[in-house]
Length: 278
Ligand SMILES: Cc1cc(Cn2cc(-c3c(Cl)cnc4nc(-c5cn(C)nc5C)[nH]c34)cn2)no1
Image (tube, rainbow, N blue to C red; front, side):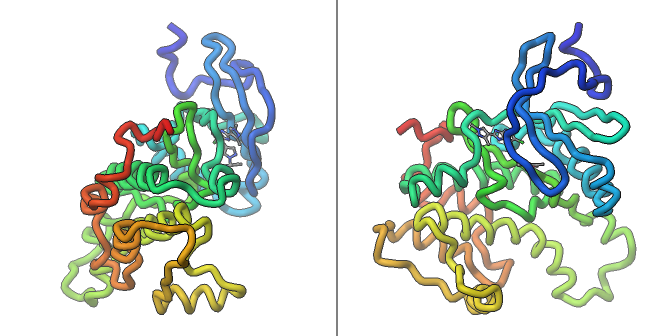
C-alpha cells in the first residue's frame, strides 16, 4: 500500500504546501500535508545552487544518513527525501508547538520542572545518539522544537558528525598518539555534556552563563569557567550543583549523561512523560 512506499519514491506532487515555518541559510521549511494520508509534515526545501555555493553537499548527505537512522522520541524524525532539478526536499516530522527558544523568550525563564524535564529529554536523546556514535555538536535553543504534547525534539543534524571512532583506530596504532589526542575521542562526546550545562543555566536564568559584550570576553569567561549565579530568579541548590558539575573545563570530568539522569535535581523535578503538563 502507499504507506509502505519506499523512502525514495516521493515527489512534490505528493504534498500540498502550507505556510512557511522558518528559514535557514540554505533554504526554507514549510508546513505540508501528504495528499493520500493527509499526514502533516514539515518540508525542508534546500536549493542545490546553495549547496554547491557553500560546498555543504557532504554535510547534507551526513544529515540525511544520520537523521534517517535515528529513531528516538526526542529526535525529530526524517521520514524521507526527494529532489527535482534545482531543489532537495527533506520530509520531516512536524513539531506543532514550534521552537523552545520562543517559549523561553516569552516566559523569560522556565520553571525548575520544565527545565529539568527538557534536560532529562536531551540527556536521553544524546545518550541514544552517542551509543550510535553520533555527536550533535550544535545543541542550542534554536535547534530544539516542541511537539503537540510539549515533548522536546532535537532538530537540524546538519552539524552533527559520525564520530571517527572506528576510522581513527583503523588508520594507525594509538601508540604514537599523545594523550590529549587519544582523549580527543571522549572529548568529542563530552562537548554535548558541556552544552547541557549551558542550556540548563539558560532555561533557569533566561540568559547563557558566559554571555558578554564581546566575543573575546565570552571566550575568556568560558576558558576561565567564570560562572556565577544571580540572586534572581531563585534557583535551587541542586540545580546549581548539576550546572557546576557540567561546566567543567576538563572534559573527562564532566558529569556523564547517565549521571545527569540520576542527579537528585533531575529525579526530583523532571516529568517522566517529558511533557510537564503544568
Ligand atoms: C532551512 C531551515 C530552517 C530551519 C529551522 N526550522 C525548523 C522548522 C520546523 C521543523 Cl523542521 C519541524 N517542525 C516545525 N514546527 C515549527 C513551528 C510550529 N509552530 C507553531 N511554529 C513553528 C516555527 N517549525 C518547525 C522551521 N524552521 N531549519 O532549516
